[in-house]
Image (cartoon, rainbow, N blue to C red; front, side, top):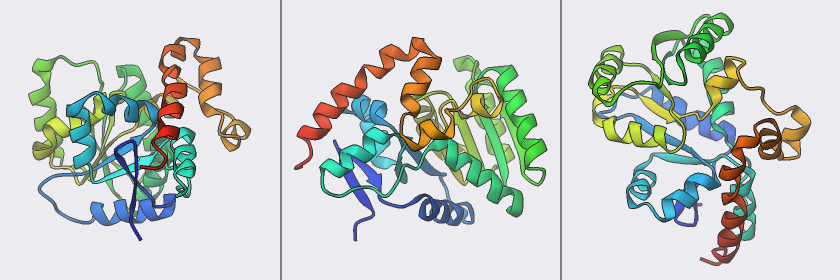
Amino acid sequence: MSKTLHIMGVPFSTRTMNETLEEITSAAGQQQSKPFHLITANPEIVMKAQDDPSLQQIVNEADMITPDGIGIILASRWKGAPLPERVTGYELLLRLLEIGDRKSWSFYFLGADEATNEKAVSTIRSKYPNVRIAGRQNGFFRPEDEPRIVAEVKAAAPDFLIVALGAPGAERWIYKYKAELNAKVAFGVGGSLDVIAGKVKRAPVIWQRLNLEWLYRLLAQPSRWRRQLVLPVFAVKAFMDRSK
């Protein structure tokens, strides 16, 4: 059985959340020349990859791409090969922190504003006391600061490099420096640090169960409406792509 399902040219993992965690845990236990690059992709990333060859290359070379977004799940159903469940960056991060608390994994947190980054790391220290914080750096840095940041990550040699630079900003940054990072696993987590820090509230459970988190976020942050315009376009293209 294939471990991937292509949706509009993007190879999505067909693994469940637990199977994904097993794969990542295995990667975290191996010494590699480059980090295991995980991408949690939503319809927005899929659409951007259609017209951006550099992003398509990043996607093609990723070690695993998980379905982050109900739109991806619906597209898989239209293809007659439904993916088992959403595997979101936020949930993955929380589950990995739980496992990391038992295994004493080290994490480096890159991204968000300084106050949010600091608060998120402080919250993680408190909730997961056995997780080792290898370092942290806010996301408001200049291009000339990047060699220092890369050198710091390399020296810290974290088990996990967590990047909150937005999508696909995080994916581009990881890909650009992949050979130098000296981390075992690296992935972008969108606005997850904002949620952990309490800056942004996650959708209530009932909204999550109804797969309406996107609507909750839109109502809570009306400025997101321009980003949401991609969803109907994705739906039409994914439906037309169902037989490919």
